[in-house]
Image (cartoon, rainbow, N blue to C red; front, side):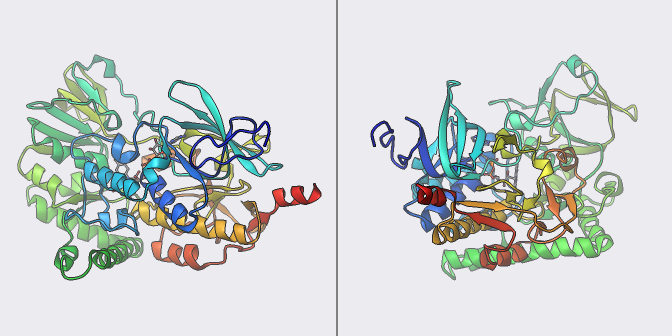
Length: 510
Ligand SMILES: Cc1cc2nc3c(=O)[nH]c(=O)nc-3n(C[C@H](O)[C@H](O)[C@H](O)COP(=O)(O)OP(=O)(O)OC[C@H]3O[C@@H](n4cnc5c(N)ncnc54)[C@H](O)[C@@H]3O)c2cc1C
């Protein structure tokens, strides 16, 4: 072993690396909901594999630690946003951000995953060597120093957006505004909005969360939207879960409610696709019933698109509608002409006075947490790749990245992806393979956008996202039941995934 590093810390293995470079079987990037879930599956199926989780921030939890705006919550139910392996036990089905963060932290603690996280370690570049069949990661530490690590398999759980800052369209006159402008992704700690006039720009999930939440202290909150979204009220607590509580074991109750919610969400999505007019009428009917005859639902809650052409917005216990009914919140559907010293001037000529303007204008979609990926000397341009099962990329070996569904909870797909990764690694172990690479072998596969949403943030992301193919396994289902069959039971060696033995061959050659 002369000249080689000794074991640096628990989990790191000494290999033929240059001195001081740690090697891991698997490096996970990101300690959010996905990273913690992925680590659970990995260590359960491979107790002997050494792995580490690199986390760029100083805390785990990702989204649920970053976002701190008033009222921050999920809009998925926690029976499907929670992990399959760890029941959600709280009464709230739509949970607040701190409870979700707590759930992630407790999961990490319970399974000892917290000891595997290295904070303040941002993966900047990953370089694949075909000769060595491993990845080398350049990792920026807190102090700015870059270290190198290597791994056999790289598992990205880095989310889907840029942590550095959200999407902010430029409006004329912003610099003139005398009040405070806030983006929800960078909510100032302790921002006091007591008695203030607030305008929230946006009509997505964040806006519909913020508006009722800020009516607790603000004088008035306006939701200013260029165009409306579909807003559907759901009960904050799940009736079936409540009924089952105490009657059957918690784990069983969780599974029943999880499947019930999966099937209801799938049904709503399929019906929206097949009978958009019927679903549109139903959603608008509920809004009308809640908001009363004097509210202009046609203007403020009737989008130009069909349900599920963009993500639906869910509100628990009609909180948004109740805030509007109480007079503490209102909706304005108009366009901004300019910011003024005192607020906003709209294209209709109306002026909105404001002390605080919140730009709930969305995220900047980012792949791989901003990390560059190089394979054999060439930087991978992800928009030129085809996504394999929505988790690997054509001609990129030994790399998986986690993505959730657009029409269902993120964790449903993240959990399936983790299970699939374990099956893949088992297949490789059994066959003594060290490389797996999805290869597009057929010529009759058409390339299509990865996501067929008309939402602004998806449209803006088209030059960042990979493509999907017209056929399996390049086709994205956005359907948990189909994915479950495919991810859990289909043959890993499917004719598209290429397996090879690089190190074994090199060893044999001497
Ligand atoms: C406000 C908000 C509400 C949401 N609500 C829902 C919901 O109700 N239901 C739903 O299904 N989805 C929702 N989502 C989507 C949500 O992001 C996912 O549910 C889920 O939290 C994603 O988990 P993740 O671990 O994959 O990614 P993230 O939560 O984004 O975590 C990624 C982690 O990776 C780290 N990281 C990134 N790049 C690097 C790098 N290069 N090096 C090191 N570390 C890195 C980040 O610091 C972060 O900790 C919401 C998103 C937002 C922003």
